[in-house]
Image (cartoon, rainbow, N blue to C red):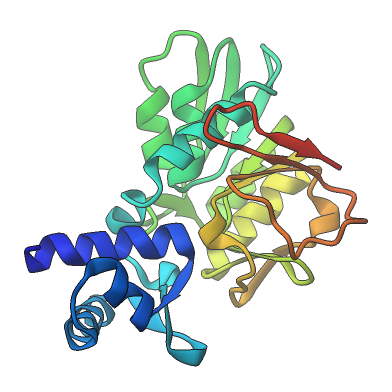
Length: 255
């Protein structure tokens, strides 16, 4: 297998497994441990992977460029987007956060609906939909995250009220809740929750059991969580409604 193809496959394995040992990777790829180490060193230099405890390797999701993150778990994100949209009543006012998983929600959204967002990608996705009333929040442009943030964004956002806020997750922890890697992003997320009656969160399994520096919300503040795999670490007594989405989109539902 060519080096580029092998490294792409390594990233696919890591996205599916979350983390995996060097020995397991070598056995799966039928190559030497030294070859895997060299490939992983290249991926580390690119900010795509990081060494973990016990010789395991995991994706460094927070450090990834947005374009690279967008290529991970595409099918799972599409299924998550369809599952979220299935629960949004027609005519709702929905606040959509930024991120590739929430972008999948926007792509599957059925009108009529009113959408408030700070994400340029989501605005472009919905810009030619006659059944969607689109409100794009302005503010300071964040080129890396492709969203608007800052004081102006918050001021405009606070003028609205929404039925549902659909947030993406930088990191989600069973005890520490939802957190974000950037302070400005965390502030926008908190305000989206504050103006909305229902708080929904959609996340793939790479975001679970992680924590970033800036607090967004406790899990008790989230009403509904859409994820692509069962979350074993979540307290069984948690009040959040969890929808686990499987391959046929029907999902597993539990409270």
